[in-house]
Length: 252
Image 1 (tube, helix red, strand yellow):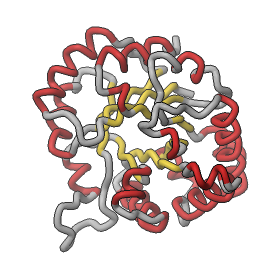
Image 2 (spheres, one colour; image 1 turned 120 degrees about the horizontal axis):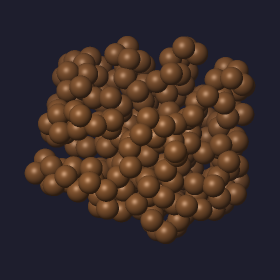
Image 3 (tube, rainbow, N blue to C red; image 1 turned 90 degrees about the vertical axis):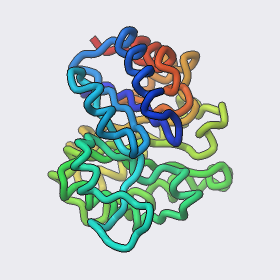
Image 4 (cartoon, rainbow, N blue to C red; image 1 turned 180 degrees about the vertical axis):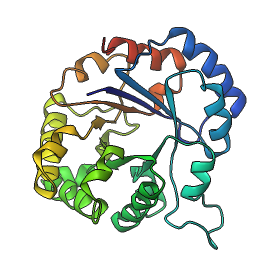
């Protein structure tokens, strides 16, 4: 399975800054067909960024999508609009969307189904809060998130599904989950997928880790069994830092 290195820019970088990023990134990063690199940029830069990287094996992603094709949803972006922007992949269910915009697992399920209609890859983000972990509810939370988010999805649609385990207490805090915690979460996710579908689908679904991944810890995290890559926030905003992470974990 490919190693995935996904950069979430969040609400950062103008298109001019992305242009500069591109020049520096391409000069330093190792790219081959065994590694999958994606940049999740602001909506307003999607199409232009896609054209910047048109000669490179790099995916361009959106950070969210609405669950309707069109309608009176001021400020929202639909799946068909993202498709028109040549979007390759979409983040759905990020903890910041859940926290600040009150997105529910049912909303997330509708959004995933929208992207499946247009044959666009989805990164489904899941993870527990610190309180939920301390109350020993991690298994319950992850199970509920997966069951509700994946409700009604067919096995053949999983060619376009990637799951990112992002413990909320580790996002942007500088606190990284231990390798043991991450490995336990990955095993749990695969167990749930096997129970919902089958073991082959479970084994073939890419699972990423996100949460304060840096230059300093990426090599250690890369040793985690059954981990297929990273969804990186802050450390991906510097092209040299993101390149370092990719190159350090480079799959020949």
